[in-house]
Image 1 (spheres, rainbow, N blue to C red):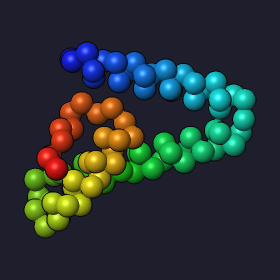
Image 2: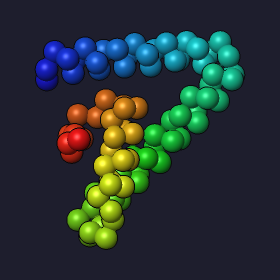
Image 3: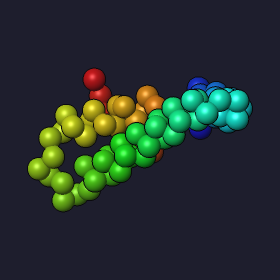
Length: 84
């Protein structure tokens, strides 16, 4: 794992810890993070379905767009950039 990737993952872990603290302080934050988690979960599901071998009818731009959103929201090492 590269230093940049490790540093990014450490920052994500810190943000998750901060999120937990915020959730205990405010129900509005908790609801907001629940919505975010729902969106991430649904995008991951869509990405998996779009990436299946039998999904040849799926437009490539659609796969790339979902992948890009997930990469921005999460640190997902198994997803590589498809190029710009």
